Length: 78
Image (tube, rainbow, N blue to C red; front, top):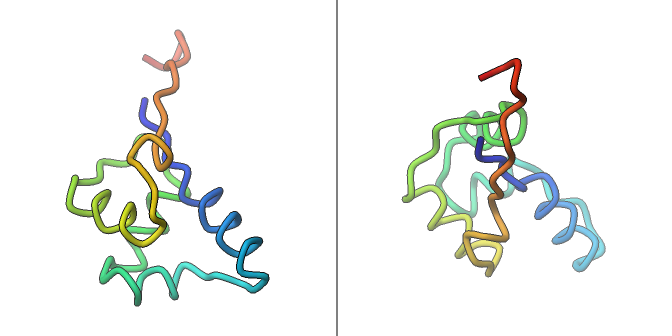
């Protein structure tokens, strides 16, 4: 399953800039709907298109591998 590291990237940005960074701020800056960002942060395995990943990589100045990781599914959940 794909796991998004959105929450971690927001926390890293907030720490580096010494301020609070909200989902609303990310939504406004990227043009991504806040509900989509919330889904990425809270719903494991959310289906997100590459256009969204592209916008987030641009916003966070990161590579896709820093935004998402692959996690093995639990045997009982597959």
